[in-house]
Length: 136
Image (cartoon, rainbow, N blue to C red; front, side, top):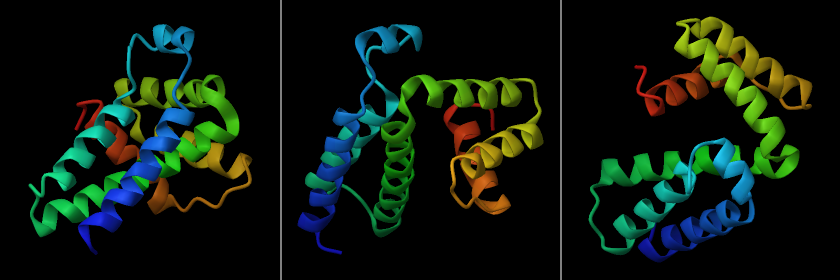
């Protein structure tokens, strides 16, 4: 894929992140000034723009963008309060070393919201979250 097309798609993701960025009050509740998604998207954009990536890295960037895109569409649909509630329960399960419970919570949440969610998809999401939380 051409660099300019990748940059264009990352810009779309950046716009979605900005549209779905939590309010100042929500950010304080989350103990943050900026969401990690927004920070990650900006880093990926600069990496692609500066052409400082290998073929393997661009694949990882594209996968990461897909993951953030999916998450932010969910936030746009249900809002940060609802998203944080399920996210908090999943994080609590992971911190308590109950990974299977976290997978079940995520999968049930997706199904309750009318989405298909395979066990594999739920596990991949939880694995990624576990890495981001530094619990891997």
